[in-house]
Length: 414
Image: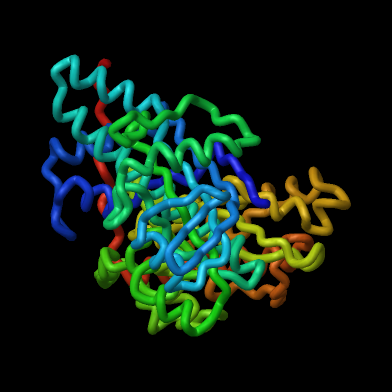
């Protein structure tokens, strides 16, 4: 039975998602004060936030008129039908929280008569929880895929047809089976509200991959899921911003010759690449690689490639580059080279920085040996994946305008 506790989950809130929760329409340009507050809330959480996610597998019993999870019956007809439509056979409990630090500081801001800072931090906490649920959904998709299953979107007390009063019952059920102590107290008030309030308790279903199951899931999960990148995406996210031209700042993708199929690059650019501006005019670009080991039954692994690019007018020179296992990834420890000499392998991965100091476009002329293995055990395989990352980033930049830098975050006293 699966049970994990992630103390460093991916809580990198997408700017568009944060703006959406703040109530701004898509494409709206924030005023100077709003930009300052949004940047401050993000920076405060990056320094002080303590998010965490707990995940545990549970037994699921579905009958015509009953639903039991780990032997406890829940009366929600909608929850039962939600799981039954997709053919769920197993369940996963999830607890996702932005942590107590955020709630306590927000209260201090309110008491200090700083309503603007309070509001922006509160909304950022909501955005963090949405991000945690999305990344957890992706994690469950990965775990389920390994067993020939697919994840059924989560449902929580308070959702349509599930009485919020069941929040207490669900919390007690989750709590009594915990084998990994949580890093801080979490409770549910008699009203059903969790404390910290920027928290979510939910149930994911796991269903066998079948045409009926896919049909039941086709409309909802991916369209409502902001996780990016995700190799299990089956439909575009409904709130995703449409790409715009780069306005001549680099060659158009249609004029470039890539080693990767353009359709694959277009998918990766949407789902795996993230580009963030920096105050000095540079960009931070990242690419998530998902693969499997070549042995040990093909254990899933994930690596993050992060590079700093100079300004467009200089040809996007690669100033810094880094490759490391994605937060929470354990699959890399099952690679043959890691099992043979882990420190040496990780040192090689950390020190190899191809094309450092050269323009990003040089990746189009970089001759490298094709190596399609999913692992990072040898130099050729690692170079191949660096090429994938750099080409995907190049393609992404050719499809969109370079975002403008956000002003330096302001600071406020508690």
